[in-house]
Image 1: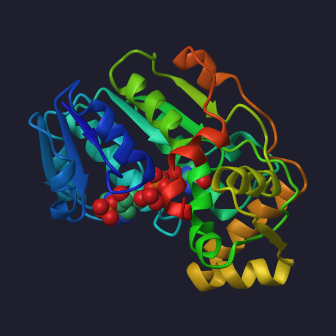
Image 2: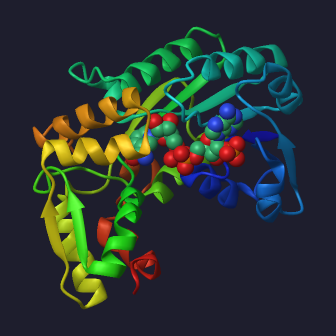
Image 3: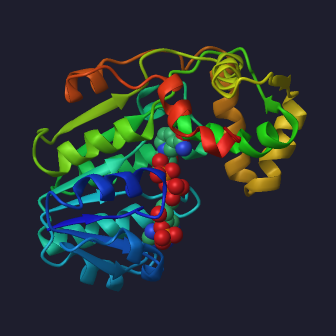
Length: 283
Ligand SMILES: NC(=O)c1ccc[n+]([C@@H]2O[C@H](COP(=O)([O-])OP(=O)(O)OC[C@H]3O[C@@H](n4cnc5c(N)ncnc54)[C@H](OP(=O)(O)O)[C@@H]3O)[C@@H](O)[C@H]2O)c1
């Protein structure tokens, strides 16, 4: 049995789709009604919350491998609760969705520090581990969908800075291989797309696919921060702004070979991700 968390989110949902017919899987959500549609014949659905260790103990019973997606940098106990429950339940392998910046010494924002600490907790637990360390997801550009549809505009900070963003489907494929034992545990995999691409270049790709002109409006630092504060608590907004500044300084441009090596084919480029998600942008 494989337990998947984060299945109502971007990567976990894709992992659930990939494994639905391959292995018996158990899907965890705080609200299991939301995942009924994902559940196939060999799939169990379970309620559980990283804040509630009792629920995790029940969810992990009889589980061989687990996919761990924690997403709240203000709740550091979530990873500890999950890893403790996994160890007690005899789980043999935890595949954790982490972040590329963990391995970059100059990255010291709250989100990266939390992921680093969480990796340490799992590494020290005695449970076999795999860390997936993606660069930013290509799907983050779905945040532009409304202004693209309504105004033909994308607003971005450091719009010319290259960024080796990765298709979440590639992350999910690597996760599925690790969970089914096709990738040996005990390694961290830096996952990027096949090239570094700027927001300006992504806008040009979208414009070409949509066959309509789109305009990139460069945000000032203050405007970017204001936008982040409207969506996130201040400590998270601060961390995201710090990450954006590192991107602006060119720190996120490096392309890694891991997707190609693990999947035996090149990583999907932004053009392919955008083509497959064009309806969201009005295409
Ligand atoms: N976005 C990026 O560019 C990027 C880049 C690198 C790394 N990452 C990392 O990727 C992770 C996020 O992955 P994602 O974007 O696929 O997820 P997501 O779309 O943000 O979804 C979050 C998931 O976490 C679950 N969740 C939240 N709180 C929970 C709780 N208390 N107990 C149990 N489940 C909980 C939610 O499930 P329910 O609501 O159903 O309970 C949901 O399925 C983060 O660790 C982030 O640091 C993201």
